[in-house]
Amino acid sequence: MKITIPTKQYGRQAALFGLAAAGFYLLMVYGTLAHIETLTGLRPFDMRPGGYSVELANSLIDALGIRGRWYYLTRQIPLDLVYPALMAMTLISLFKWIGSRDVNQKLVRIGIWFSIAAAIADYLENAGICLMILSWPEISANTVMAASVASIVKSGLTTTAVLILLFGFGSWAFERKPPHA
Picture 1: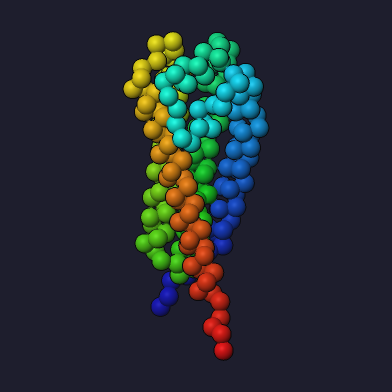
Picture 2: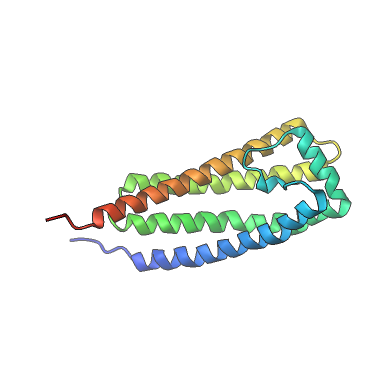
């Protein structure tokens, strides 16, 4: 007896989470992060997938000024507390959707773990950003390094999760093609 998996449910979840994640992402990129970049003339921490140095962190936080630091903590960070979970839930729903279509289950599980790890790294990055802003002008080099590493790890894990997902979609699409006669 074959167990039927609710594939439509996963598709709907992926669509809903994906739309919400896209909305938050656009709000951050074209709203809060754009405003922070306008205030400082520098790309915000969240937009630096390659990380940042102590000097750059100090320059950015200094350029924010008192109001900009408050804005980062009360506008950008709250949005970025919701976004990682939405992104992870989108990816997990997509992995479950392709998993219900006879895609290698090990690949699906690995993709889900990468999605969760990416969200955790994003939350660690956010915690580091908050610590840097709250401790300014006495920012610890270790805090900057930890936040920077979290940014790099978040970017790498997210990219890997998406690549695994694309590979899963590709293998599913390839296996669906009827054989040539």
